Length: 97
Image (cartoon, rainbow, N blue to C red):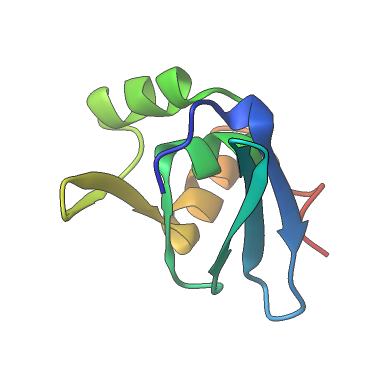
């Protein structure tokens, strides 16, 4: 789940409203599928909004974006990310139908 940066994350929307994230590590693709109400990492959230992980971290630090800690990872729910995008004029339209 720990990716180097959102630039290397490929996002594929799924019919159920979730996403498949693909990242290449050591020349091999690694896939992670999340449902429409699941949690995403900071890097995955950045990939969805077109920003880097540091920007997502800043939003969390500033209290603009909610999060939960799960086994030491800072995770963001997709519904919270969609609400954030709507409230702060970011778009996930490229990924949403």
